[in-house]
Image (cartoon, rainbow, N blue to C red):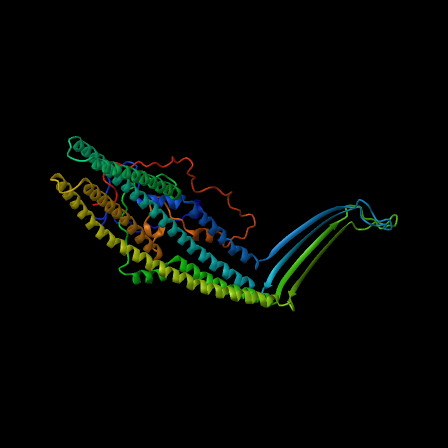
Amino acid sequence: MTDTDKKPSLRRARWLAGLSAGALLLLPTGAHAETLQGALAKAYENNPTLTAARAGQRANDENVPIQKSYGLPDIGTQASYDENLILPGNSFNSPARSLSAGAQLTVPLYQGGAVRNALRAAKYRVEAGQADLRATEASVFSQVVGAYMDVIRDQAIVQLNQKNVAVLRTNLQATSDRFEIGDLTRTDVAQSEARLALAEGDLRTAEANLIASREGYIRLVGEAPVDLQPPPPLPNLPATAEDAVTVALTSNPDIESANELVNASKADIGTAKSSRAPKVSAIVNGGYNNYLGSLNSGVPGVSVTQETSSAAAGVQVTLPIFTGGRRSAQVRQAQSRSSQAIEQYIEVERGVIAQTRGAYAAWQANERIIAATRQAVSANALSLEGVRAENSVGTRSILDILNAEQEYLNTQVQLVSAQRNSYVAAFSVLAAMGKAEARDLGLDGGALYDPEVNYKRVKGELWDWADDPAPQQVANDTRAVPAANAGVPEGPPSLSPQ
C-alpha cells in the first residue's frame, strides 16, 4: 500500500473482550496466538482479492480525468523531414529536401453537454466502485471469519474423535480382559473392535477436514493458523430480522453501488443525446517550412526564399444532419440500459433483503440448536454414565455402552458445528447490514485504506507525464508457508462441547 493509498485512520470502537456466557471456552494464550481481529487485519493487508479490487478501483478513478480531458484544450505538434530521391523530369524548381513543422491548438467551446454528462457518469461510477470495494471487504471478511471458525470447529472435532478413539481402545482392552476370564463373549470383543475401527476412520476423516480448513485459511489470510483464539462476541446485532433489513436498505454497499449505477445510466442518456447537438471549437494553427537551400527558381541567377511560415485562427462548427438513424439508436440504447440499471437495482435490493432475512434466520436457528444440543450433550453424558454402571451389574450389554458413547460423540460434534454456524451466520447478518467492513471492526495494523485519497489525487491531474510507479505485488504468496497438518493444541477444544 503506497502513501497515497493511506490516510490517518480514526480508530473505530473495538470489539468487546470476552465471550457470551457458556458459549465458548478460552484457550491459554500462547506466544504466537492469533485472534480473529489479527486474522482479519492480515487479510485486509494481504488478501489478493481485496488488493486487486483496490487496484481496479484506482483504474476506475482515472475515468474522471479522461472524460474531463475532452473539454480541455488540446495542443499538438508535428515535424517531418523529406528527401526527394527522384525529382520529376518536367519539374525545374522542385526542392531536393524539406523540413516542416506545425502546431495546432484546439479549444472546445461547446460540446452539446457531452463532456458534462460523461463526467457526471464517470463520477457516479467512481462512487459505485467505492461501494463495490466496501462489498468486497465485507465478502473477504465473511470468508475469513468462516475459515477461522472452520479451523476452530475442525480442531475441536479432531480432539473429540481422538478422545473417542482413546475411550474405545480402553473399552476394547477391558472387553478383551473380561473375555479372557469368561465374563464376556467373543461377540462383545468383535463389537468393540468394529466400533474402534470405525472411530479411527472417523478420526482420519476429521483430520483431513482440519487440513482442508487450515489450507483454506492460508489461502485467505496468507499465513498458517497458529493457536487460534475464540472470537469475541459480535457487536450491534439486530433484535429482529426487520431491524436488520432496515439498516441494510440504507447501509448495504451493494444497494449503494446499484443506486449509483442508476444515476450513471441516466447521465449516459444525456451523453447520447449530445451527439445530435452542434460542436463548436476554436482552432489556432501555425506552420513552418525550410527547403534547406534545395529550392531554386529554375532561372539562373534568380534566388527564391527557402523558408516559409504560416498561421491561422478560426472557429469550427460541426452540426450532424443525417447519420442514418445512428444518433437516435444510441439514445434509445442508453435509455434501455438505464431501464436495465433500474431493474438491476430492484434485483439487488431484493437479494439484500433475502440475504439479510436468511442470515438472521440461520443465526437464530443455530442459537436454538446450540441450546437444544447442550441439553442433549448433558443428557447423553448422564446416559453413558448410567449405561456403564448398569453394565457393571449385568443389565446392559457392551453394545449398549458403544451406542451410548457414539451418541455422546455425535451430539458433541453437532454442538461445536452449531456454534461455528451460529457465529458465521451472525457475521453474515452484519455483512448484509453493511456493518462488517474494516471501518466497523477496529482492525489493528495501521491506517485503513481510503479509496477517496487516490481519487482526489488523480481527478484534477492535467500533466500528460504524471505516471505512477511501476506496478508491484502487494499480496504475499503462500509458497513458503508449510503445508497444513492435522495437529491440534493441547487442552480443551476452543469450541466447548459441554
